[in-house]
Length: 112
Image: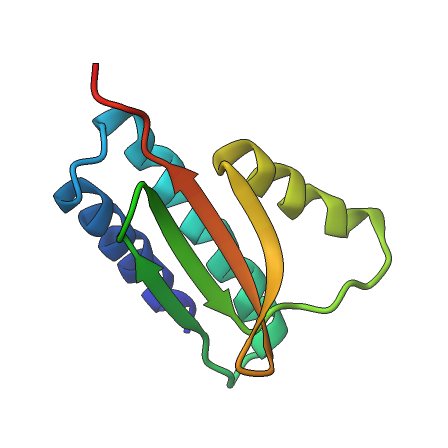
C-alpha cells in the first residue's frame, strides 16, 4: 500500500543509521527506497502488495524490492532508473527464487 512506503523509507534509514552509516548518505537511502517502492507499487497494482528486504551485513547496504514493473518501452521508464542511478552505488534487476527483484546497494565509505 502507498501508505506504507513512508514506513519502508524510515526502516531503511534506521537500519543504515544503526549500522553506522554517515548521516550524509542516509538521505540517498531514504529516497532510493522510496523510489523503488513507487516502482514496485506500480507493478503490484491497486490491490497488490510489495516486499522490501534490507541487508546491512558487510560493507554494503542492500535493499531488495519486488514486484518489479515490466518496461512499457516509453521514455517515462528511463526517469526512475536515472533517479535510482543517482541515489545508489548500484541498481539492477536480479532473480531471487524465480522472482525478478529490484536490487539497490550503497557502499559505506571508510571512516575518516
